[in-house]
Length: 314
Length: 314
Image 1 (tube, rainbow over the protein chains, first blue to last red):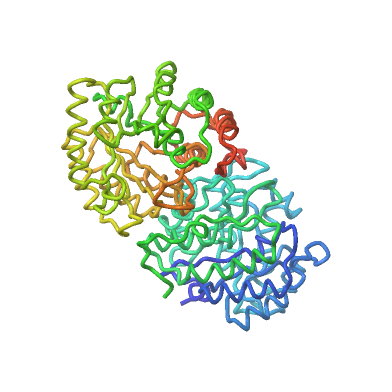
Image 2 (cartoon, rainbow over the protein chains, first blue to last red):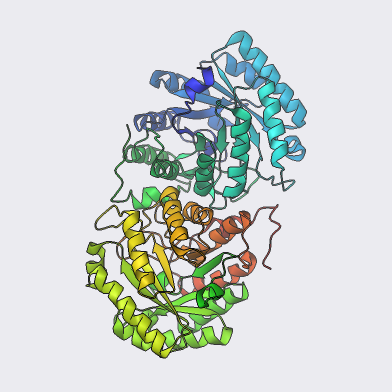
């Protein structure tokens, strides 16, 4: 079994909690490090094992991620899989020296978004992936290199994105040495057919290796898109507790697809997530207390599970 | 082409607006007749052609439906397809004499809910369908008899519901002369797999004849369930503007699946709905003004369509 199939096994559905990274990207008030660690602990207690815990970005511009070292330490104490965003060489060099287990690079699906978001071309972003992989191979061979393809299902700058182009970029990232690629509906443009189609293509491209689908609930399609993804071979889904998160390219948008609702949906489809919905409530409480200005979403949280829900965490 | 395939053609997706019935069932404040008619007009202008406009229930207990005659008149002036709930013989006798185009009967999927909701057994409810059909045949052969199977995807009183049992009841209703059967997830228990399964069974049962899927968004699965329904042959979906509606058996629940989000989802899947999302906003405005205490939902309404949305009403 390869490094990445060990971390993201094919026989279950893995939900990556991205609330501590994507969910804090545009947060009005930054939760304290203590609150973030408590949030991590409580989600771990509920069975969550995969977290994006921050970004390796300049703390002056992104103070919400200034405590990433403390988050890495906390992740290691809990023994959970930690991932951090690295958007440039310096970020990757810093990340490599830490105990973080996964580096997340970004390649945009469109040239326009690539320039706007990273001030580099898509090819230059793929070249950066090669550099990060070389660094990883030399210095920290047990770390995962994950590449997220942003705007892969529609771009708020240039509109339509052809799935062939996304697959070409995903293939380029895998050829550059990435262990896993994520398909991101960054601005929540997609419906379930488009998500199902791209996941079927990714399943074909990746074979027995996993890929990630990263969903936003901007237009209420998040859960439907997650279901379509599962129907078409995806087994790793990014979501955030309470649907936290925004996007600088999608003003007014809701955040990631709601973690709790995706757990319920996946379990209702017969997929084992290992996550206890009751215990997730306790994690949500700490996040809500730490971020009183944020709007938390989620129908399952509001309504509770149905009377006939017999599955529980295992 | 039979009566019912003429009204619900197989080559497009029909969204039935149930907000004026299901959406008002538990409304805190009752909108005026004028507001309800304006709401109807504006949705008609947006391309909506199928409405549940009220119930034939005692006006003393259900004052929100006391103006059903005015709603029928308005529907006839607009030339839209109108449906009204008839839960007993008296209601059916009243309805038959009006210009309403569709009578909606209810059969519960479970004995327990049947007794709690209608104070009769399921068999007695099926017998009532036979009586309504006989009345229709004798007095108003151009009216549609629709039977909704309540709690078909899980019951808040008795829990699990076996799909075989639902299909048996649906078959019994069709044998009793019903033109169309609706499968109702009354309390929003189902995930997309269960909805897909029951729709596949209904597609097999109904052949070229349509059936209805009636969805609530109680646990955030509404849009995912609608997508699974379309994937498995359903072509008629009940939804309500802004996700209005509650259920006396599901306290605190959100209402029906959001009409606007289902339009977006269906169009994104390549299904033609004939509905203009921009124009729906104007209908929503009148409903919001008429019911200021109600919570209106809908991600599409909040975020607007994506930049790459090229479809429009046709």
